[in-house]
Length: 190
Image 1 (cartoon, rainbow, N blue to C red):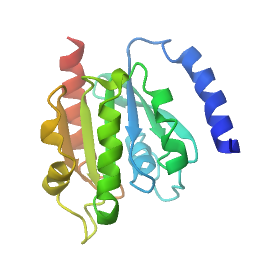
Image 2: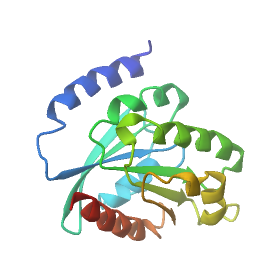
Image 3: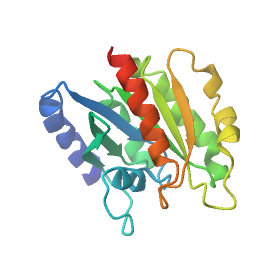
Image 4: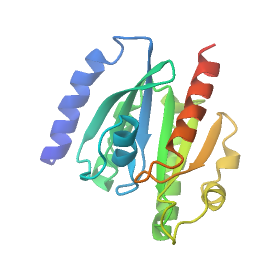
């Protein structure tokens, strides 16, 4: 087992101890393949500078205030070796954000398979899903509607879902996604 996996496992054990300290915090898991833009989206949500983002080798957790909600957003690396550990972080998830690199058409099938496996996880059954179709600022980006069809989002009948075109770099579309989250989390909590 590599050093990254060992540190992920020990951190996961520590985080499980503090995970349920505040019931008023909404837990959001932010997943997607490596280089999809997860960390840039998280950094933008935290109102921080997005110019020096490096690939996530483990995970980042940031507290974000959106409207009247306190969100704990868990950004977990998307490298193939880390994806096998995603399941360890899914407990008590209130919402899943899945990020797709809209310009990386060669990986659409791979990202679709990963998402399909995730939504089958018992701890994510019925959990609302927001898909950010990121990198819409690139000329080669597929439109969000094409990505939604490719991911078979229309077959996800056990949950509410939304696909949101965005650019993590410019911030375009991110607030629209957050508005959807706030509306659906509030409805789910009632």
